[in-house]
Length: 453
Image 1 (cartoon, helix red, strand yellow):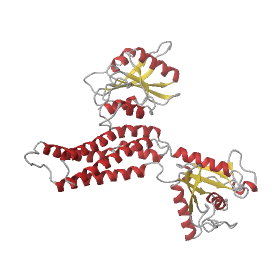
Image 2: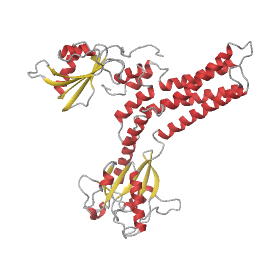
Image 3: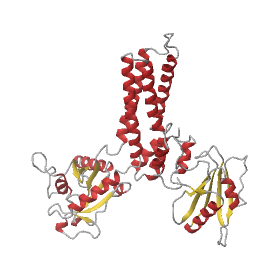
Image 4: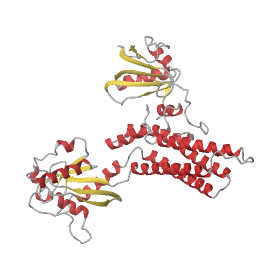
């Protein structure tokens, strides 16, 4: 339920916004949503008139703007309510992406009766129309703001119902259980029970197990479930192991963690250590130097190093002064964050513009640690963090109410108390998916969106 509209925009206004990226390009998309969308577009382009009985439509049009001598080519797409993203009449104007022309087009839409959309308002209307639950609406922001394939995959999973579907299943079961308990309250004088104690305990235990599983899944998906993983890679004898020892420090016995040798290929297996940089946990991995394998052991070392690199959050590609002609191999550079690192800077002049370090003199190590901390902080900025944190709070409260309900059944307490605890658990589940919400909650969620989404 909505606790009162407050500052939320009226959902029946017709709004307009640029839905594509800002800046020059081949195409810009201006989107309108609301009951007056077709009429506003028709006022700007009389030749763009949808057939109310035809459903979804496309038509070409000529867009004439004030003080623009030539008409602009435009494609107009009509989607009639209710089968649209927002549940309302929705129109998109596709035309040239020239910022001055796009601004002029939006101004004409405003003059014709539309108002400017607020951040996230298109998705908010989808939520209010029942097209999305709250977890899916937050996933839209996750998709738009994803900074890596991993973040995009998490957001798409949530958008597809990866979080909402299990919650809906347990919520339906608890609603049925509450109905059985409250039905028994109406016949308390006749000593009629719609569900016995054993069934109550079993169904509550099922709900507890289900919500506990959801809690564990959320913990696995939450940011911070593992340290930021940095892999040292590069050609043999590039100083990776010496740098690893400096970053990782001594082991408990006071010895270096990695073997350091002037003989190329001394590192045959990967080593890892977790360090703290500016209060951030960073996992550093040393791998075998890249070269052509000559035997089975070397092939295993190369395979192991490549596997570690594929699971890295960041690769430091180390090159000493003797490796100027050793660029990162394309399989590594294709889809991973990679920073070229000039190692052994005490032995030669580093490349201009590259981060240069020396494990012997310590030169550049503070800068390297600062770069690792910055990268780790940026990586931790998963756009779904706020969604998972909000849901985790409600999951914890739901678990507590279900535990109390289970205890009440065991102690054979009055069914009125049992019904209250089940209802409170349902309210927590409802708050997660958006069946129960407030204006303040919606404002905090959708204000993080960009305009036009």
